[in-house]
Image (cartoon, rainbow, N blue to C red; front, side, top):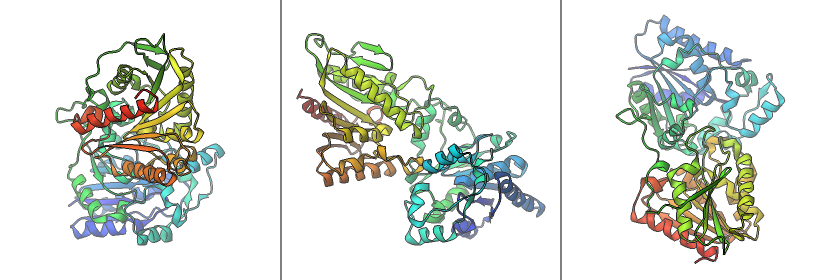
Length: 498
């Protein structure tokens, strides 16, 4: 049986790992829970994990040692493994992003507001106070946590020394060569499908994970699985130690064709494309003589900067643009700057500029515009719902993420559509839901629908029961084709084309 070294995350201590350590012990595995304790910097915490590894080595135990880091804990975990790589068989990251040499833990801090405030202030000393009981959701999804779990988190929480967050992580490269496993928590919005999609964008950080020896597991819970499902987490850790788990590659070690680049679910004949800066226009015949309504299709994300091809060249959006033109309206696609989850303001500005440019085109009826959003662009519907310009006849969305996910740490109130529709008086909204959506995303959609109903907002919902996120390239079913056709029909009616 392997031997585990468990490293707690921000604000938490050994108490958070206790139940999982007991579950591992019940299965015959030895577990050491590291008490990071007080300290002034990341190096202090790394030294404490190194001390545990040295103690295991001094005891002469020949079992494989697996170092597990949760949240911030992955920084001291990786730092220690880098210094004692010969003693570590595998690294496990629990609901945390990959770390990089020279980058401090502050870059991955869950609460965006706190992260930005500390970055702007340049503070490196002092402590970050722990959250109150009702504030834990700002630091990660609380899905699966009982009241007792939240009480334990709150009672055992300790202030986080700022030096542990601002000190850059020093690595030699030894840790990068170790086998590793990521435990994804669906409540945070993480999934293997999402990672595969992001890898297809060419993100170099994630591309490094698409190699032999790197595996993944998913747990249907929130950010603290060591509390919400300690038994399941223990089983996953044992499986990870055995080298099990899914990978980002196919059996042939070749990347899969991403959903957005696969053939579209409808047969849409070609339409000439006009490229104008960041915009592509698909214009139906006769628009020069009689201006037409326009539908602006807004891609999701985040899409890393420099990804090729860019979204307006993806099969999905080319097809939607052509589909709109064949319905007699101008189809518009664009590239915007949603390159990271903190970039919603920049992306929203790009969209506003694009809409202004579309409305200024003489072939477009400036008083009849619809905006159609996809996936991660869902939060960008909020400013339009709030502003309610008279020329915006409706909004539409396919499998949208209707609020920043818990793992994003984005707390900007300008991008929470549910809060806007709850007040009523918003433009009509056409929603296409994927029945096989991840539950973290589905929860944001359910919240939006409930808020729209409470506010009396005009909402049309079309369901694809057997559809996944990005179903246009994945699920060419009758229900998917019907939902897209019916959603387009309803949008055209709102534009006065039905």
